[in-house]
Length: 157
Image 1 (cartoon, rainbow, N blue to C red):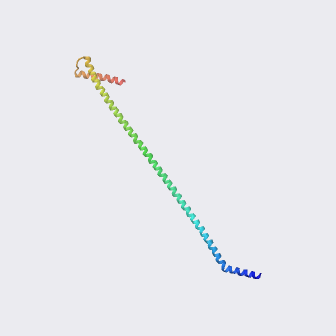
Image 2 (tube, helix red, strand yellow):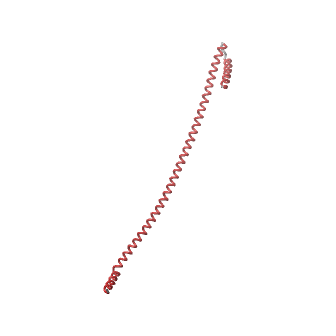
Image 3 (tube, one colour):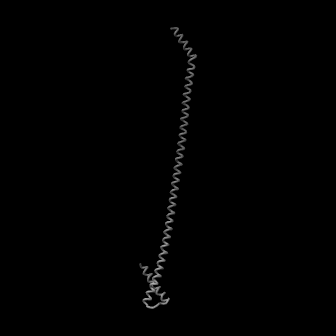
């Protein structure tokens, strides 16, 4: 038993002198490597989070810019539509005014034509009634009287 203890002590001393230092050194190296890997993983995670925040900020800025561009485009389209409506309204008013002037001119022309025809008809009737040819002064007087009567009748209707 004594020799077992001595041999165990010698074995322990040999292991402590030659085997344990490299084993402990390997364990320390492995622990250091694991710690460095964990620190590197933390750095990568922090970098990834920072890049994610930058991406989200850029995405938010791009979204805001897109919304601003969309709003500006909508406003330009609204303005263009309003300008078109105003231009169409002005064109409609101009066309309406032109039509009214044309109607008035045609009415005056029609009234003048009616007067001329009425004058001729009145002269013709007067010649038939009187049975003789009238001179220019008589023609004028009868035409004026017929026109006055026709105008009075026309205004009543």
